[in-house]
Amino acid sequence: MAAANAQISASPGIYVLALRLDHAQRLRIGALGEFQFPAGHYLYVGSAWGPGGLRARVGRHLRGGPTRRWHIDYLRAIATPYALWVAPEASNECAWAMQLLTLPEACIVAPRFGASDCRCPAHLMLLNTDCLNVSLLPQAQTIQLG
Image (spheres, rainbow, N blue to C red):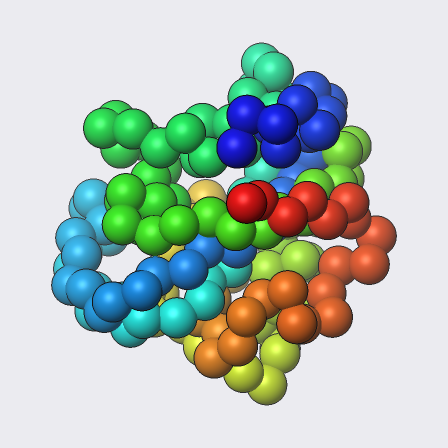
């Protein structure tokens, strides 16, 4: 994953992280509550506007770790990242989330996941297919992880 992180811009922007969960699990997501996460493929839409931009934020997600700061940190502890889409300097995180939620195979498992600071229903969606087979976000750079 270190090689993939080197490909990511240090500019601020937005990203979509694809994760695979091999076995269904019940998981508490901080103050958001407890949810049943079915096995499958998940897409998480996030933004990175802090120091180090996309490289720092996505690098943290790829490394994982014990500290749970964002909703995605809880899911990342049990799921494996396998693809990433990044768009340096883009700022339409909610538009991307809403676009992905319109995919026929997309469903929300944890309402408000990743969306505590906006009005979106969620920034995490479960797909019933490998996310690499989905035509999405043509304006973003695609990075396969492992």
